Length: 449
Ligand SMILES: Nc1nc2c(ncn2[C@@H]2O[C@H](COP(=O)(O)OP(=O)(O)OP(=O)(O)O)[C@@H](O)[C@H]2O)c(=O)[nH]1
Image 1 (cartoon, rainbow, N blue to C red):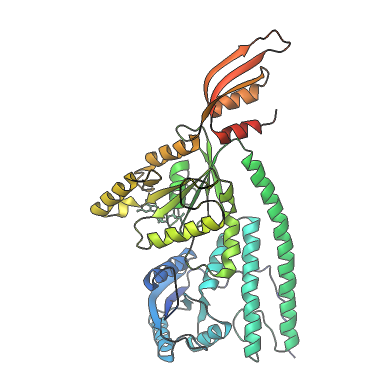
Image 2 (image 1 turned 30 degrees about the vertical axis):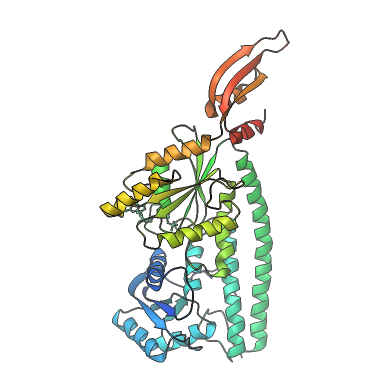
């Protein structure tokens, strides 16, 4: 009969994995495949991602794959080894840190008699859990549907009937599959429209903020680099100091005071991850757009991580694509980038000394420990210098009644002289001699009376 099951997008579609599930994590090291990181670092990252959504990593291993088996990815002996590891470690879930086709996933689930998720599935779980803003949530749902759609099509062309998998396919029959595909397409269409709307609102917000009288500092960096920890240190607030990856899918904004600059907005952004599946790039970038409006970017780096250099290259590539920074100084309108070389407390003494030495050669690199506070003052001083760079003295004459504007000048600029000038006219005027950066002058000029 083939009872129809409705596609339901409202009830927890995004969650396939329960918190606390015990998992065996496997990183296939496929011969000839290029990756940003080596297999061990990828495995470590995958374990971190799994932990971030509350999965218990019971066992983790790299499995070299000479030749991909179309049906199962791994060879049969390797699948047996994974099954043994699952038995030994009482795991109910297998995380494969690579891309699985729908068929491979299904076959592995059958042989292992356990739920199997691949890397895209894992990252979608994290995005689904962490997306906080409307745009983030819409992007994640869209990415999820896209992922499911590709599985639906592929599985149908190869199989007479899909079993297991995502659970929303009911009875067999092409009409059923077609109907499901149409529903997914319609839903995706609606989501895209909603996204468009949300983006417009966001652009308005950004515009409003860019006219806000405060400079913006954006924290960017690889996942687990220590952005949230530094953010907390700087703002003095416990925002999200969890030992979690992606503690911040959506930008978090806080205002802080710097020694020389009265007030700045600090914006924490989502962490980067290696080899981001292409389907997820849009969801990830949506959250980074905030960075394009920043006055200074702080690139937080985990200097205790052996993959630190590769991570830096990726962050710079994305910032370059966003058109905000190119890593080189003095080029175009690029936003200045300060590198916060974090986790100095984890380095050995010679490593620590080497880091301090290299930082002395480059004023835009500041060794810090967001945990102990080492170097944080120096970072603030550098930020202050960049935010006040290019400041010039301006003579500004205003009607004496412009109290708010005059107060703004005192709050933001370095006021050198401020007197009332009486030129015999009807209205007394104030003449303020004040040092302002070009950006501050722009902000001042956009103030409304
Ligand atoms: N020892 C040491 N640990 C640090 C330091 N900074 C951060 N950590 C730790 O590194 C882990 C990750 O820090 P977070 O601040 O959550 O990293 P993040 O960059 O915000 O991570 P995402 O939100 O995933 O992008 C936490 O366990 C922190 O306690 C540091 O300077 N020294």
